[in-house]
Length: 248
Ligand code: NAP
Image 1 (cartoon, rainbow, N blue to C red):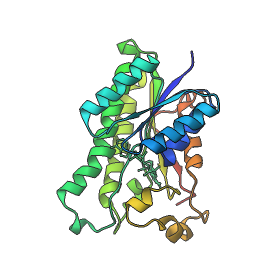
Image 2: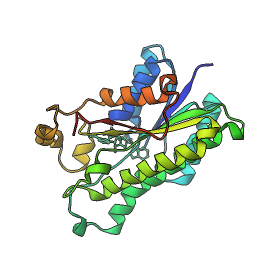
Image 3: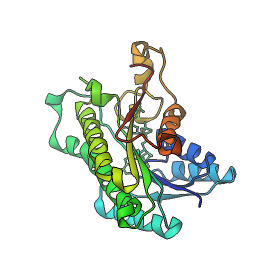
Image 4: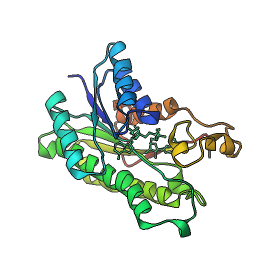
């Protein structure tokens, strides 16, 4: 049986790299994204051109009804789910905590925390051997920000990733006896468009001298850690984290 994978936020950046690598490894791939139809279609076409199978679903993971629709469409197309990558994540323009309002903090938490919970919930309902599933694996995209705190930039984002870490630890223990492994990856400074959303497209270049390895990372370098955690090679690994940060 060919394995299936859902990658949230798979239209670009780290999610797109995970989608391409998963297809290379033989997964049937479902890419979720929020708004950029062209980017998601490009990832699907690239996978299809390489002989793989992929489709894309536009849905906001922060909205419960949209997450339920996403998983219903996934059921209709694949009929099973073996792997989930909770990758969709957002940040907001850099500022100090005393400048933040509730709406901004709420937007970050809605996608990064609530979205990860909702997608994990739907995945567990399908994967759990206690609920008739065949088991599976979940990887949550955290961040080194969860440990470093992102002072002066986005402490709200860092806090959302610390919540994702707690989700990873707690859920891994809840479902360990039901055939599901749950792990996290904490990327450091990775070259993606996300930094432009924080108001500083050149952020990786500015900070790369603080990285012991002296450079930012590529999305593909994160994807390799994600796909390893999902694979049978990681069969005894759950509730764990891989730092993909060049030592920072
Ligand atoms: P990115 O380039 O900004 O891409 C984000 C992806 O998430 C896009 O496909 C976007 O869709 C999708 N997305 C955003 N909000 C969504 C929502 N509410 N519902 C569904 N999809 C949504 O991000 P990235 O840099 O690849 O980061 C991927 C993950 O790694 C994130 O969780 C991020 O926090 C984490 N991370 C990144 C870095 C880094 O340096 N880049 C470091 C540490 C951790 P649209 O394009 O359609 O809007």
